[in-house]
Amino acid sequence: MNRRAKFELGKSLVLWSLTLEVFSLFGALRTGAYMVYILTAKGLKQQSFYSGPVSKFWAYAFVLSKASELGDTIFIILRKQKLILLHWYHYVTVLLDSWYSYKVMVAGGGWFMTMNYGVHAVTYSYCALRVVGFRVSRKFAMFITFSLITQMLMGCV
Image (cartoon, rainbow, N blue to C red):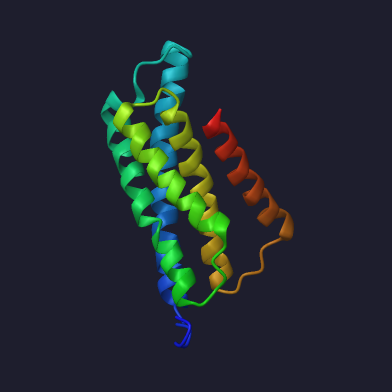
């Protein structure tokens, strides 16, 4: 892209962000409902998140979505915005970690998926609003950053 003009992809980026926002919202609601069921019915001694009838589908969709989220990087490159180390490092490591966690059915995977779906629903809504020119409070932007960092730390724990 060094010798090319940047692409104006506003409409495409809004559509992209809203699609991922709706997907993440449904994922958060479906996995969240299952997590509430697990807590109320079985407490913290849960059965595998990966074998529940609904959670099994949303766990698989979650893993597949990590590859599609690399599309965010494509938008950054085509719009000639700064691509920072944290961005691509985050996407690559989450993609590999999610795939591995799904393969070996990591016990805390359901908690991480639910948190990640929820945080991404808010994050992609924020992105869509910013692209259309809506001014979002700096406090809300900081809340999103805090939420992203918190859910990553919780995922590590």
